[in-house]
Image 1 (cartoon, rainbow, N blue to C red):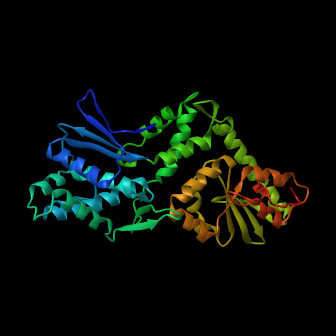
Image 2 (image 1 turned 135 degrees about the vertical axis):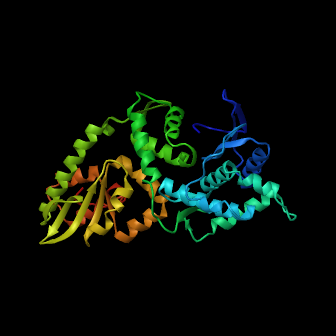
Length: 383
């Protein structure tokens, strides 16, 4: 999936499988190809949507799978009912496997891939048409499935895109965007220098099939952790070596404790938080210090803040990636808003420690992914 896939292409692999790459993202085009492949007895090994392209992998003799988890109840009934029942189960399983809301193109690809693999598309094509084509009948049932109460539609702010979530968020894997970030760092850590295409290929290889992440997320991770010292080649920044970041994190925690005491609080580590400021027995502020943009780990602590103001403290290099994750997950943005999380960058903590005088107003000027101290028009007497 790496790099530009600018045109329809086909590749016949050594194992006899045919790979089609399509830039036409109209659902009807993809649906027609999958149905035609099924009728031609070409097994659908994989259908993945990423960036501006779909990637369809066909196998002449693909054995049928044992069955899709959670879809055991689709074996009976008219073919159309099997489509809708299976589509619901596939969608729920895909969302749970990704652990976060899923955009419709990715969910659409997962549904059609599995419908073909289970032989359900073929059953519809062989059934009575009643005047409607098999393609239309399948599409209608998939659309019905997308409105099932087991699924929840989420609107993305300032975007026409919709995401799908599960009504009962149980059995979820770790959020895919967090897993991709960890994998991106590992890929960069294990290489001296990589082109963006090579980097992307290595990250995508770790998340096949329905786990394929968005190209935008993969690119955002690259720019969060790497620099381009030579045009066209990317390297992990020295400050993002694990030992360097862990040492820096410890220092930032010490700075936060010192700042709390200077502001008149008693300050201490307070599990599960890395630092806390107390006014008597009551916690006034709690801090989670990460060197990665692990939103899910921080947000899971929201209820533990016990009425205190919660802060996420991150390196400045993670701010754009954090913003990307929030912009593409309205559930996380809502959790940040509801629990009143504030963000502070490492470098601003260091600047505060260097000031001879600080107060609560000074603290407020460094809060946010785009804090006041970074705005050119700000008038700050202490900086």
